[in-house]
Each structure stands twice: as structure tokens, then as C-alpha cells.
Length: 492
Ligand code: PMP
Image (tube, rainbow, N blue to C red; front, side):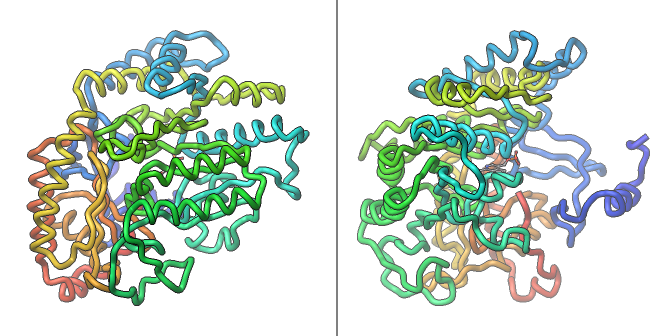
């Protein structure tokens, strides 16, 4: 029945019966209505193909035949829950643990990134309770402080919203950050409060933390300065968790400076807290050089090598290649602190045979098609080509990232770094409207174009993206403004 609806009817029913709080991308230039996808392409109902540089969920590509058939077969066989034995869940738990370092070998399956982070916070709280002799944390006297990075996003549930500063500034739902959540500055060395080697003062884009920017001579100096905020929080508060992405996505593709994570983790451990690595956007080889983003800052270029092993890792988005599948992985010691509280963990849909079939097939394709190596090769090529563009375009302020996790920050002025917020949004609209290229925008000033395509993104896809991007950058933006209006943010 639904396939017989006309596009206007689809739009009409959605507007009438679905909440407006669920946004639609590209609303002003015409929302997209896809019928199918393959590799890094989405095809709309009129047969028009779009290059997808924004979908980090369809990790192995849209409509991957091996993954589709694994799911279809399992749907036709059995769909139950983890209270029964099933080989898919057991094997997937082992395979996920094998991909992680150290003794990260206890897996909890969940359905989404938000559920994963919510459970990770529960585990950290349980661990702290066990180790500090408390009998439960009451909400009016919290003993489980969490340190998070400014502009981070970790989920849409009440507990994860509390630890998502990005959402605290959006709308009026959370007006004040709860006192047990401690926000530290984002370790951004391009425009943050401790940026590296920039001699000219900032003007309109002062970060919220400080009226001044304290420039640093080196990345190490910046790393130490940024880590000192975490160290200070650890000295003052009963910290149970430090929750951070190894590559900060919503903050605008910020890869922490070398040794930052090491110093923060040491301080958190000293305070009796745990390091939770949110790998929901960045996990499973996206950064090319490493399987997990937390390994990236551990010195893959050989300068510094600190092996970083989180206490808890959360994975989601790409894990099921689009099926609701996410997980929390931790050590036996932390898992047993939680188990000793005597509460059963049951989550109806989580770790179902169908979800796990998707996860097993995704992991198989990831390795059989060498997608991490592809992310590395195509990502390096993209970075190289965008860097060449840099010399030809005044708009590009910074290019950063690794593998197929790249951010291009657009500015109005190379010296003051005034964010080109509106222009970034126009460029995304032009890319979609004229070139049929889908991109996303992130960053505290909504001026970072984020490229995080399915890992099957090819060299040809990369070349196509860069040539369209270059042409879009040449458009006379002030005059475009009247044509396309203000599109605001394109949500991920
Ligand atoms: N953590 C990060 C870093 C995310 O980007 C997201 C989703 N954008 C989440 C957690 C929440 O995941 P979900 O939407 O699956 O609940």
C-alpha cells in the first residue's frame, strides 16, 4: 500500500502524523525521497543518483548483497532474544572482542548508540560504587561525576543528553548542565582556546570558555594544556567516567593532539574513574590507519607510542550496516562490578539473531573487501586533493581527519577565522542541488563539511567529490544567498 503513495502524499502524511522535531534534510531545496542504494550511491524515486559522502552507517555500502542475504535468511528462520542460546550472538561477541585490545572481552548488545552510552555510564557508576563502598547513587547526591568534551554528542536519552553539551545549546530542553557533568574544552588546535601557532587574534569567534586564546608553540604544549582541565576536574570531583570520542564527530572532526588522551586517562584512573571510548561514529576502521579512533592518538606516526586501552568501548551506527545493532564492551572486572549489583540486564531486541546476522556479515565484508585499507588509501587521496584545493580557495581554513573521516572547515577570513557558517550551508545545498552530492555539516560553528562516506568509497568517487566541491566553492556565494535562502544545519 505504501509504495502506491505519490511523493506529495508521502510528504503530507509525514507532516501531519510525524513530529516536526524529527527534521528532514534539504527541506528548502526539496527533501530527498530515495528508492534504493548501492555502494556509495543513493538513487531517488526518479532514478537520479546521488553520491553519498555522509552516511557512516552503511559502512560496507548501501544494499550490500552479502549483508542483505544474511539478514533475509535469518528473518525467515528465527528472530528471538538473548535469553535463548544462539550461535550468532555468541560468535559476534567473540569477534567484536577479538577486534579490541587488552581484556575488553565482555559484550553487552544494545540497539543504538544512545543505549550503549547509557549502559556504559551505568557500568562506570557500578564500578565506582563497588570501589568506593557506596550502596547506590541517589540523584540528589551524585558520586558519579562524568567528564565530557565541549560540543560532544553521545545520545538522545535523558542520561546521554546530560553528557551531550552539543544539545545543551540547542533549544530550551536542557538549559543548565547538571552539576555531576563536568564539561572540559574541546582539544581543538585550530580554533580552540589553545590553538597552535596562530599569531593573529581572533575576533568574532571566541570560544565560549575564555575571552582569550592562549596560543601554543606545539601540539604537545596544546595537548598538555587541554589535558590540564581534565586533571583539575579529577582532583576536585568523584569522577566515575571520562566519556570521549577518539575522533570528535559532532564537534567537527577533531582528532585530539598527541598525548592528550594518555594524560587524561592517567588522571581519570588516578581518581578511580573509567575511560569510556565512544566509537559509535568512528569505529570499525573508518580512520584507515587503525581499527578504532582511540588508537589514532596513540601515535600511529611513530612519534609517540602509548598503547591506549579503554575501560569501556561503545559501538553502534556501522556495526549492523544499518540494522539496529550496537554494543558495549568492557573488561571482566568492570562487568562483574555491575553483575554484583544483582540486576538482570535484559533488552528485548538487542542482540537478536537478525541483528547479529547483520553484524557478522558486516564484519565479514569489512575484512574480505579490505575496507579499512580502502579507507586509508582513498582517505589519503582525498586529503591530498582537498589540500591542493586549499591553495586555490580562500574559503578553506583547515583540513583535518584520517581515512574516511575528514573535516573541511570553511572560514570567511584566514586570519580571524571568522566561521563561514551560512556559506557552508549554501555549499552543501549547491552540492546536493546542482551536483547530486550529499554532504553533512558539523562543528561548534556549523562550518565544517564532514566527509564520512561508506568505506567502499572509491578513488573515482573521491575525485568526483573534489571536482564538484571545487566548482561549488567558486559559486558567487553572496548572490547565491538570495537564491537558496538560509538552509541552516543539515543534521547527520
Ligand atoms: N555517540 C555518537 C558519537 C554519535 O554520533 C551518536 C549519533 N549521532 C550517538 C552516540 C547516538 O547514537 P544513536 O543515534 O544510535 O542513539
